[in-house]
Length: 506
Image (cartoon, rainbow, N blue to C red; front, side, top):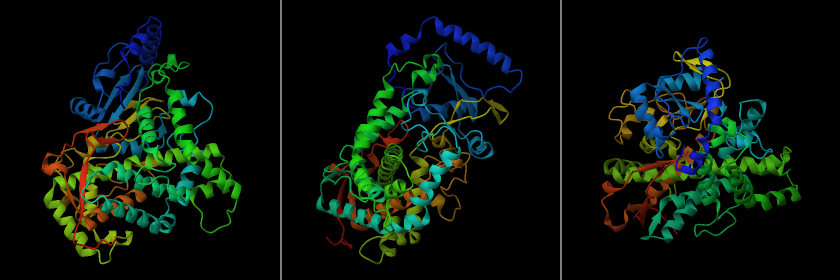
């Protein structure tokens, strides 16, 4: 939740008399409601009209919310304008929300600016579908059976391996040069999704191709989605888009992203040879009768969710290994011992338990979505003795849970060994460790993302020695973080790759 984009002028606009009447009416309603329900979770006293907006901080909201939970408890409530926000910051609170009451707390808090406009993405993909209704289940089933099932992932394993090999060859061609690791990983993830969905590469490592603007568009879209909207904070402003938010979001979705694959989709429709046994995701969607608008909504979601989070996680993974020499040496010894061929294959990953432990530890310290994607209460319910009112937004602070000293020994330290011999997984069943979420709204791409990240990092270890430009001590790598929806390194990681004496063949 990035509050940085709300200007002083926009706040002043709100400080006019008529919202006071609305507040007065709400106070009466709340007083009446309190006779029938337990109280809201505790929290800091809200300021008049604007609520707790400035108390939760302009940046790194997950850290401010964690500190609040230490003061007020594992389940707290805040007011963002006139809307109630509930935040869970413990494994017990997360279990109540994501498992016990998952049925009524699994709505999605979609901005009313999207709900009130013509259909574009609202209720056309998983993220922007308000409730887990039949349409949502249909879309999720499409993803799980046609793109993310074990069979679908196995059929694309060779393609993913080839794209990682292309990445390795590119880095070998840039041996000794300063590489921004996040940018290279973004291209790799984008082309893997491009081939799974459209059977094409979207961009090369020099930035050429029809998808050359996707990285920037995805970053801007994520920032816009994370930006609080005045009509959501103050429902009485519902008819007005004072921040010009809707126009900007639709431009990114329909033009900046939609134009990337528009011609490819149309060519597939014109060709119409869907009887082939080799079908990509878009072929299947066309065959099932999806319109171009529906396909665009799913593609926008797929690339927004599957590129940036993957590239950022690999960046954190590489940074942690560089900073922790002992872990790096152990994982390097494991990779070199277990990989017998000239390249790493996905089938090799099961023999790399320490690499996976390092991956799990990276996700613990640096979850891609520190607050998950906000949920919404479909009905009023009771959680941990407090009222969760209908239609309020709910956040689960997995960043705080993953660093809880009641769960984790020495929680701020990178210790992959904590996962060796442990049954803790990222499948959403351990509520003290939720990097991909849990319940109905758990990230459906967990298996694909895990395979790709492990394959990529194993390949980097297998083929290269890593160095920091300028002979900087790896312990001095700046690990400061910033967050909107995703959590990224404040300073991008630069790495020099040098071909080792191992198995790389040009």
